[in-house]
Amino acid sequence: MTNQKGRQFFVLDETMSVGKTFDSRPAMLEQGKRIVCQRCGSSHHKTSVLLPIGCYYCPTCIRYGRITSDGQLVIQQTDLPAFDHKIVWPGVLTSFQQKISQQLVANCRQKKSSLVWSVTGSGKTEMIFETIRHVRQEGGRVAIVSPRIDVCRELFPRIQQAFPQEESLLLYGKSEEPYRYTTILIATTHQLLHFYRSFQLIVVDEIDAFPY
Image 1 (cartoon, rainbow, N blue to C red):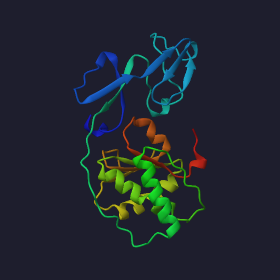
Image 2: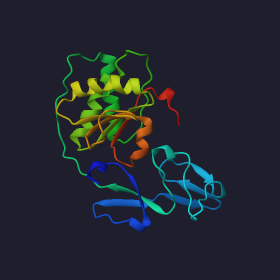
Image 3: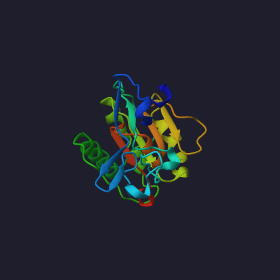
Image 4: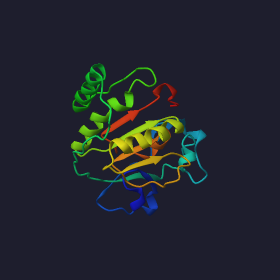
């Protein structure tokens, strides 16, 4: 299970045997005549997803591995050390970019959501650097996600360059490197289905293309 550290995985009730460092919750919840998937949040009429063995399954997220109502979603508890690494970036934010950057950090401290809406090439990625640094100073984990693989591939080396002392990973359906636990994750939005309350900061790029 070490290769699953930091993300959730499905375990049948009959084979459930995890240590104290793991948290679990039912894979599916019954709500009257409907059954709700705890991984993707979709709701189905019970009769449409009933299996011959008497339990229910979720057809919506089955491409990520079948989960059924006779099992649990399990995640290993993790603790990250706090780090205060300097940002390695040769550029300088403009006064307007700096103002937005500071507001993003302030919103993050207050656990508020933010929307940065500007044209391509306006420095949105660079404006989140200080927020990433703040989260890592607090010992938090960061996910930067996009619905588009090309955007993730473009973001990955920029984040690596800005935070060379942090462990980072690029993750999508056909990525060459398998999953491992890192402090910074760059991934497609679909990959977030494998996680549950695993990040203290989630940044969604190209949110207008969001498929869910």
